[in-house]
Amino acid sequence: MTATTCHRGALVREVVRPDGTQERSWTPPNGHVALELLARMNPEDWRPVKAVEVSGHQGGPVEVGYDSAAVEGIVKRISEVKQRRQAQNPQGRPAGELAAG
Image (cartoon, rainbow, N blue to C red; front, side, top):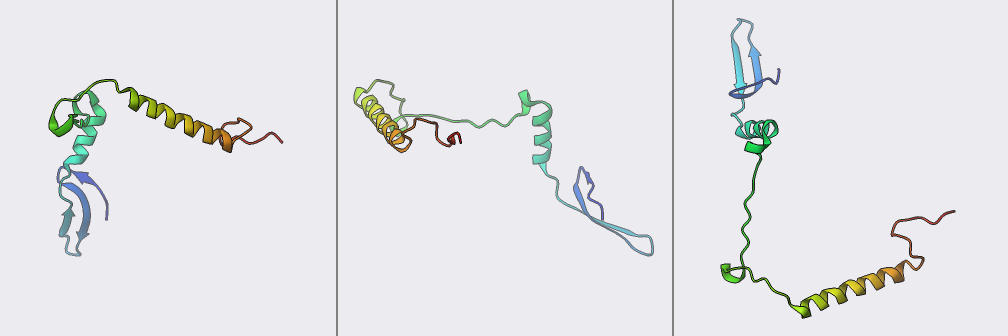
């Protein structure tokens, strides 16, 4: 049995009988393979593109603004994480770095 491919798909079974007759079974054609080949050969025209839509509350516009309370909360959380890491690593070495022997 050989696994050759053609426009029909892949040859998965080939039987040659003693009387010389042949029987072949093919997989269904796979368009994904063709699209992958096109995307690799000509990515500007054929690369897969996923659309992303961003919207605000209940599909409305995205609100852009500055909320000082939110920014201060983020700064506070970052500071707390930094203090915890410094307490766990008092020598100030980056995590995972071994001490010189």
